[in-house]
Image 1 (cartoon, rainbow, N blue to C red):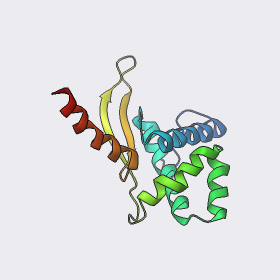
Image 2: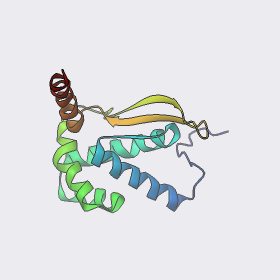
Image 3: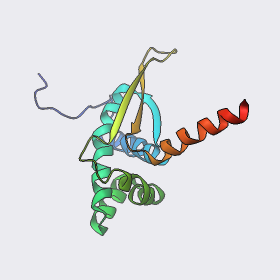
Length: 136
């Protein structure tokens, strides 16, 4: 039985899993929304939410803890300067997972994971009506 076992192993060693989650978190911070398997998205959600919590704290120690996990200075800078301030009024639930169906090649369940208060997504949505007006 797996009572109180919270870690999703994803069929990887601990070091590989940590690197995978760090890279997925950096991609999520950089792009605002990523397409991945549902298992990886569900494993990424707690990591991403902890990174947002560190970003909301904003002190030097939080920045160093985030850098120790993510290992990418530009991702940490974007996290603390853009992504976390967009969620300053929200008290949790910073990410959203949207199911997409199965992947054609191996029938793996796929989905999007994205920020709920995404500054990048808001700019993209505002740009779409302008592009539609130009096309007409």
